Length: 569
DNA sequence: CTCGGAAACT
DNA sequence: AGTTTCCGAG
Image 1 (tube, rainbow, N blue to C red):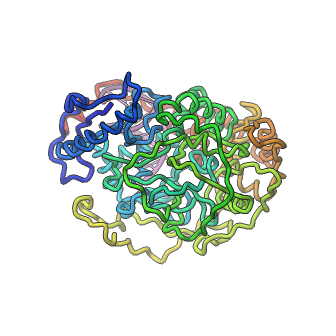
Image 2 (image 1 turned 135 degrees about the vertical axis):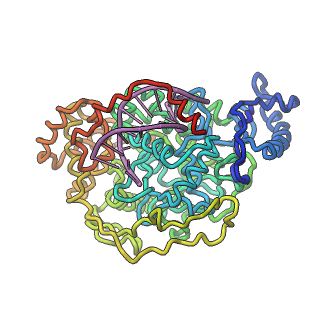
Image 3 (image 1 turned 90 degrees about the vertical axis):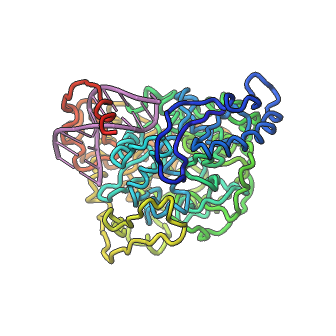
């Protein structure tokens, strides 16, 4: 079913008046459209509808409306299946902010607005907050959107651990790809997927790569097509909210590697594959592992993007039947497979890896864990593969000692180019890069990093409260981890069995070392109301335990909020 | 700028 | 559920 969402055209000229927020079924506009509902020959329908859809799209563009297609339509997928989060929020089929952010990050033309941060994997900088907000607002038909509001939305991701803030860097956030993508499909090499301009391999040194499906060439605000994402997976955030309601905010640590996630994912996907994958659900079962066909790293324009770029141009809008990478592409030897969350892999289910590749990956992961604040849990367990603790090769700009992170200061708001309505005017040409001052920001990495200590304390507390938690996200444990890498405990029979027990054992043994010193803090923590303790665990800073205003938030009393808003509108 | 509570909105 | 809107506090 198609829905017309009156909205500003993504890249249209200046927004004049906002059409009433009505939803118009395409059927009304186009009675001849056939709908798959209740019909069986979806292919036929899809074929026929495609034409009509094209036509409608044209109409829609004129009207300044965006069309969103539901997966059941059987036609081309406008948004990734998971974007609709059908499992967790049946009614929600709107693009989510983080999807949107990813979209922007993938489009070269928005580099001047938002871009991956150099040197930090998964980290991105909003170079032009106002512009990003504007784009977001346009996408969501919220003309009043501004960075303040947008950033509030982003902050909501902290607890969900989709994002976290890079402290000390303005407008800089970081995706928790650890949770979202990386651990799941480290070696995926999807051939014939499209180009993602701002993309690059997950980790600088990794030859492993995966491809983010191509975006529509027209608009990243996707008014039209964010691209062919895998239809199947991505219960991503959905998992948190859906089945994992209980653990949602309460036990966020579980998100990261619990076998439960795996199972959940499997169940989830198997149950939805029929719908989401449009009839190719059967593919999900067979993770054919093939032998390598690697390309050399370094061909990627942006080594800091978690996404690899494909040398091949996308195949346009033709529908590739999406499959569920979470299932079909996940090598079964991965005993560790956390939430099949954000796994934007497109359909041509062809990926490969080999031991060499694995080694690369693991090394890279090691680097990532340390340098990029990923969780050590991102280490998959590979039988017989031991990763030497610290032998990461790094790119020149990242080759600083582990204890020190060198980063150019973010282009501050003042530094950044004031592009007036760049959207309309600014051609894709040289986004005048803000002249980066010669200053170099030197961050002490581990020991002074308050996160580490606090985190450790919280880890301790957690294990007390919740018992041995298999799926902790122990980002900041990296220090310990690398100082004294635990002997990896490889599950004995991992192939074909997402074993959990061995994993947990390994997990535990890994997590044990060096937590004593934090006992005091732990008690302090224990005194804190549970709710407060939950917060900040992940993105914690020095002030993590200070009883901020939080709990005793000011009571502003209820009251119609909309009035004021309506007033100034 | 950033954080996060609260309430409203979709 | 996922924001959007507002806002006080750090």
